[in-house]
Length: 572
Image (tube, rainbow, N blue to C red):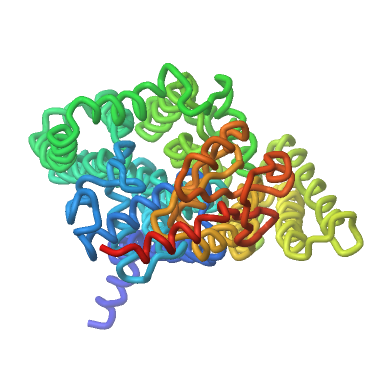
């Protein structure tokens, strides 16, 4: 019996054991990777989430709409639409017809749980963006034969600055990308199990309830890939049933807006705020055709270095499913947003997962696990000299910035200096490993980018647009403490600031300087937010200063208080 057992064990060679291990442990590996990637994304996207104020424009607007939905649930009488504000949203009491309100409703629920603050306003978008990382890994597992490119793609996506920054904001784009990736993941899985086609429609419906008609473009990319790669799937009843079920809530929402607002809803929502962006710049947001190429060049480093060879690899393998997907996705989406007349940086967000898949596939071709234990292959690899030059150049720039922000530099910034030092050190070690033809540079670069981004997110510098104008919260506090509720405050500042409206809980309306005197004399209870120089030029009569914050004065007409008191004391 012993000899028989020995014969049986002897017949189990290394190959057999390897296959047995794969069969035994394969079901656990992918879920573990998805959990690990999700936790890493969760940390990066939620740390210090409420550490800086909300940004103009979208954050302030989204948070204000969400707060009005939350208030309507607690006090329906005070809302123009009663308890149905979640269905008929308002902005400062007026109908909000810009976008569907799925994310606004989620934020409103967070306000109900954790209070009205930055953390709660940003939490739903951050959680959905974090979820998009394991979803991208799942997409990679469906289109790549090996696991390595899927892992690399997910980690590259996680360590891209624009993905992390915009994903943390109280905006719609992180949620949109998450729902798109979910829909695409279900579409790819449906090639093996048709029942997953039901999830495609759910993802489409969530996209439509988040950002409207752009869902048609994104789902069109998925259907275009299927028509090219697996056309038989287009006849699946699960797929079309899923599309019908998923579309029903979106159709119902749009139908409810039509019933209540009539043609004005279509004119504002579908024309002015959606399709008209194709042929005219909305609110002055315009740019050249290469606008998004420049965005890619600015914000996708250091992974940008590997994209040219990644696309060349995809083109050479264009008969394979993964190459078809990334080529179609990248080319069509980039072409559409580049030809659009309205240009905004976050429109490029749905393109980043495709670029991550391209870079991940390319890096997987040079990855050799034996480098970790120091075993060199007989055939020497030759990494591109352009990588060495690019990484070395970036490292040099990083060390120069370290000196600039150091205590002995011209612009000492201790926190920035630490962040830049981490980046420079990562790029330096990566360059050395590339010179040595060691594929461990991939791991070093990924880990270094993650740590550097984590340091940036902990700091107050991750939302640098806040430096473009005066600090909003002190001025909002000044307005809130010195004006009655629902007051309209005029300001000589040329641009509207939704974040100021949100924090002050008042309407602060920009007005041309030449129009201020007339409004000052005609309005019953005028309040004006202005700077000292403008106030001196205006020479308004009966000015009473209520306070000052960040160089801005809040003033009222001197008889405001007297008139208000007389009105309060009047009989009846």
